[in-house]
Image (cartoon, rainbow, N blue to C red; front, side):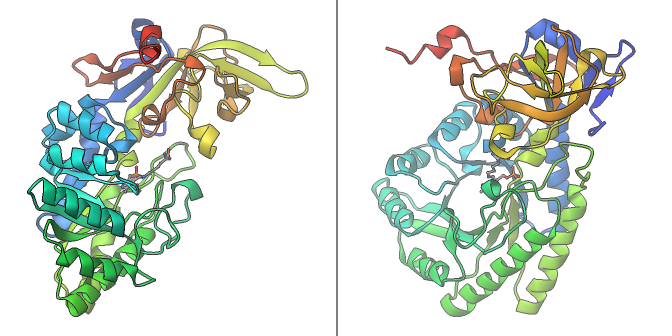
Length: 431
Ligand code: LLP
């Protein structure tokens, strides 16, 4: 199995986090999103330990909430004592109302409106990661009106191509995010930020992309950022205390994805940073990282009930399920690979090849193509693995399909973190 929280029990049922998935499907209904709470906590602790070991004091991971945002995940992050990144007033509201200590949050986004900035300040967001010049001036004005000095990082684009899917690559010079170093605009902006009264610059941020398995894009970006930090020190007498390297480590969606040891990768990044800092005679700044996917992806699994099984003789087979792009748009958007298992008969012979299709009125609503599985029967349970990141958070109500519940499993109890959306919920905004 692609992750150690997945197995098959004596009844031939797929298990997840030690729970019989077929029993969970009966108890909660389908579609059903499951989250393995212990796996989430293990990943958080793994990052924390490695970052404290290899990087200077003050270094820490932040959970990138966009990967999976709900009140319970922020409570878990608060209990684990790690920071979060938020990207919208909606995420700020979710975290703040969950009781998350907002001074430990970082607010990102390429287009924060004035009202977003005001909302962030009212909610006492710790750092705002400023994305460009007009946002810098708007924030300075709004912070001034609120009578505060807002801590900021500047988001810079180091000009790195991480060789990942182009829709999830963000560090290139022509990206919609951040201020480019190469064109000289980044240094200009630092100069301006240092002259403003109501913002206080802690350091710099970059993020190169997502689903990355190598340490190279991180070390390349970090080296460019350190060169920039040294330049700002020499030319502007500003020494950044913090360097945020963003998120991006990859996860195993299928057997062909490598299993990576994040601690090992962090050690590799730290060694490269150390070398570069010595060459630049720079004290290593505190390093922040913002993992999202690698904290929650393999802590998630989605269960569906098989509906129609259609064989088009001489062409292809379809297995349709009771969810689809509404709870998992990632195949439709990125052709993302997934491992699909017939949970009801997980140890049966796999002799049927099919496209797993969602229920929406859209030909592109597929979960996966060319899946080899035992030929399923209507009513059996199908599991899609590694769905904890960017599935629920990108879910929609297309065709007025309700979003599934998210049930947390922690070995002691299974409990609802997000309840199933009802028809009334779906109509709740309609006048
Ligand atoms: N920090 C920043 C500034 C980001 O933009 C992102 C992701 C992260 C951290 C977290 O990256 P991660 O560790 O999760 O790779 N919807 C796409 C992924 C979009 C990623 C957006 N930014 C997907 O489903 O693959």
